[in-house]
Image (cartoon, rainbow, N blue to C red; front, side, top):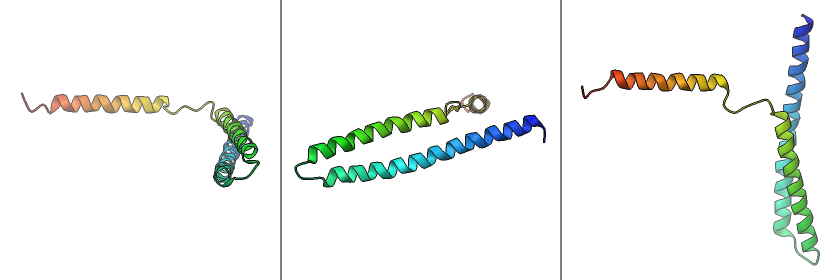
Length: 106
């Protein structure tokens, strides 16, 4: 294996590890947010306001962290890639061509 291929393999492994860690972080986030929401539902007593504010601050902070983490992991990816745009453009051109060929009114 050439050094360039070895370097590409290492970069791919590092990116895969980052994505894997993000998904684990996201699963933990969903579980903890669910538990905090349940805690907001059941909390009562003299310290209700303190517990509620603590839960809300944890939810807001962790939401910001998970968004930043996701943006750093997926920073080079776009939803609509160039080849997708090209395929869709060709598909629409084919549809227009078929409509012109099969005009029943002429």
